[in-house]
Image (cartoon, rainbow, N blue to C red; front, side, top):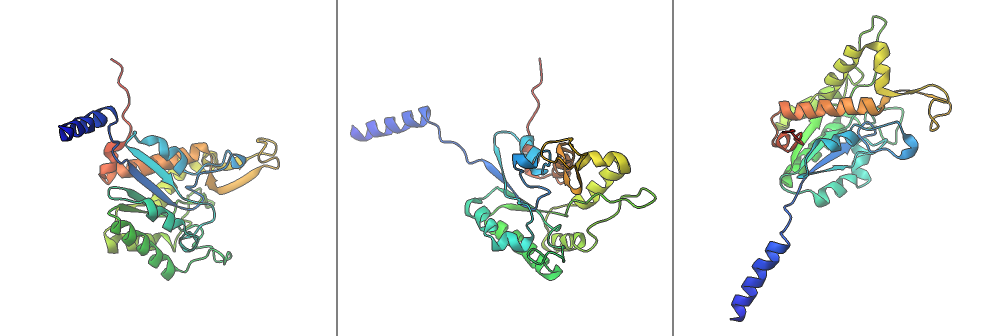
Length: 251
């Protein structure tokens, strides 16, 4: 009799308090171009910020990208360990580094090409060990035009390394370097400034002296880059594409 009571109580509890299914976590690991920004940096915006709003309630985006980080410092500071500590089967890891790895003048973050490939390989293998899906992303392009108005490559050395590791390990690849550069070209040398943190003096209280930045994005730029990443998720036919928020259709 008591056993039947316990069984009935269990089913009643399960009905009243249904267990929540584990959400899919999308990790973003990378540098300042993807990172969440503090209010004092506004209108600077990392592409990982608008990216959060593309998915339905079955997805949580954990943006661990951080200003100034290379693959080497992301590892040495324990940021990757933080990601691994909660990573689980079915999760995704979007990996975008390069801006700081290639900065030879900044010895605190510079990563040699050999180390860079080793670190990318480590991210991929350890994510897979957690039964998560790694996605390699080439470093998003800086804004740079030649005298003829052609958008120039700004990661000639490190972008090919990402592609090399993606091919070697059979990892889905998003060529954000090429796609972002195509966006700048489409908008043109002048209008593409709108995508970046470029302000006149006294235009915004956070930057009273103005700002000319061809690396970090404005709100518009971050959204445009995030939209490129979203489109590539669909092009790659990742199951994650099925968890993109669906519009409410008015009847």
